[in-house]
Length: 191
Image (cartoon, rainbow, N blue to C red; front, side, top):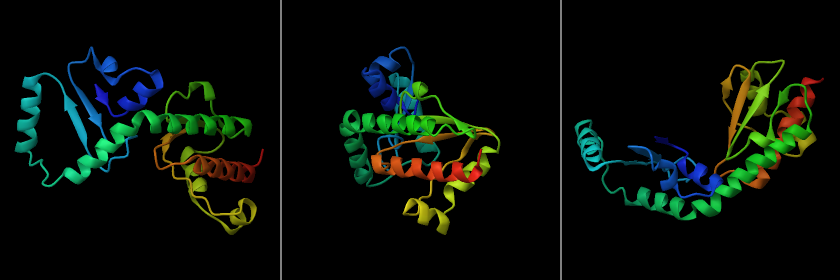
């Protein structure tokens, strides 16, 4: 199983991660997505699988010295996951509800579909890449209207959609500022 967002799923479902992977023969588990570690991943599975993964890592030159500092960040992320991840999920839902309330013909979102820290927004009437550029750019007009400069960094998910992802470094205030920026950009696009 690709467990890149295993902890997000476990917290959202209110089940231990082991329950999600109990029928998998192996799992990779990312420590940087959602948990906030700077780097790192874990691999789990039967002993012979782990031995082969260990051998391949060594053969390919993988290995770090003095990785304790990075491991410490991962341990903090794991220890705080049940407390921190629900905040990310709530910020994503808050954003989806706020974007839906803007009732723009240029984008749509289904807040009921937001289960974890990701929001998929359908873009209508312009390419998703164009919307992403507009959300990233800052203008003097924006500063005058919003009261500050806000740059929302997104990449197109498809030609007509963008995916927004929350993590521990995106606060509730950041979420509100992102909504204000979307509102500013959507107003500029007109009806």
